[in-house]
Image (tube, rainbow, N blue to C red):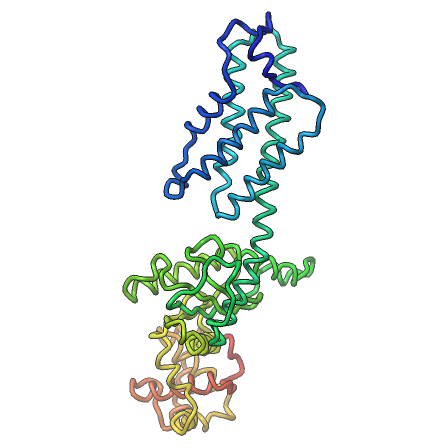
Length: 422
């Protein structure tokens, strides 16, 4: 490999190099490190980080300026990979390492170019080819070391996070080891129940639906790992699961309305990276109450799914009445019995559900059902005759709606086109 050797730095290479003052590699290394933009790690900058950058730049300059002895360059690349692994372990941005390598190469090139007679194209081409080759080797070493450590940490961290989440949701977090997972334990959590819909490609016959679903889940897990600090804990499958967000996460320590808005935006972001619809509910709870909070959050989520609610965050206050109607007992049975007279009339149940669930005129409801307005009115009259309740009055419609909700959440059939009518 042709390189800009140290011997050339301290001796003339006429007619290629003019009589420029030699630059000592140590001076070059110091000037490169001093010129780096370290804003991204300003709050974490210490002697160790600076030493890593100095060593990285020194290795880069060494590769560019030292005479090739024919020995294996592995020791230099091994050292660079080790530095990159250390930065990955500390969750430091790899971009700074790449900038340091490029800055070292750029500084060497600028020094070398000052003494080059550019009319000598052969030398420029030869040195340029060697420069590109060295830059490729150095950048690859940084990427290889950082990526290898991230893969190892991801696998280890995911297992540790799942173990900790399982312990919290089982009510035995005190006995759960958290070694290998930086998040540790929080005093309280936002317990989020999520239902992940299918990605459009999961129904593509040309693709393996299981592979598409796993990729969807990995994208969500990657967003959880990078998009929120402190890092959430999660127990997820391709269909959904539970996420525990530490209450001290940014945006989650404000007033309740702000918390709901923050979680809603966060769920929308998960849906975006997944490329699939995501429904969610959440309950804020102390650490010790996490198991009960998870049960309640999933009950609310099941309720939203049964009621045909769309993607996004469904707040407890929006489901409070429906949740109460779903509670088992004598009152629940009494409410459900309101629609017993329509049990053998699925068409009337479809009509009632469409009428109560679709705000708008009778004309709009009739169009949705594919019937005339006259037919719709006759069906409403029939419903009143069988149940004794008029769907067009506020008091009676409330009782009919409550009965409909209670039957839905109890899994009872409420017509012939339950999904379409929702």
